[in-house]
Image 1 (cartoon, rainbow, N blue to C red):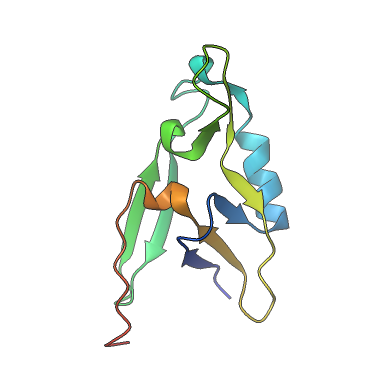
Image 2: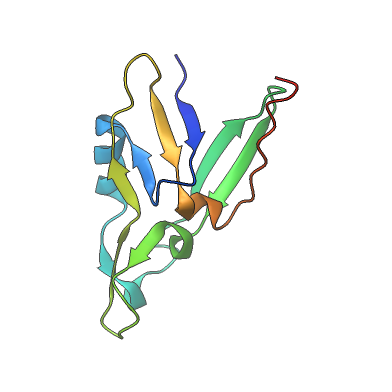
Length: 113
């Protein structure tokens, strides 16, 4: 089964299941916000398939996917990811929460599908 993307306005961060969460956290390290660069924290890409079967790319920069501890000059930034395992009958999946929705507008239309 292919992983599902679940867009949820009630979830703040991105979520990933155990294995994927560990892999993300190995690549996206917490760091002082002022020291992050496109090289240290590269763009991430979500490639999703729409209801017509067409692939769409959604790119996010570190400014989008890292959460700051505050506005102070020494603020720390951490990946906006949480570990959540979707129940087996509904997964595997990832929740794209408010962090994703701040950048991308979504339309919910169940009328035709």
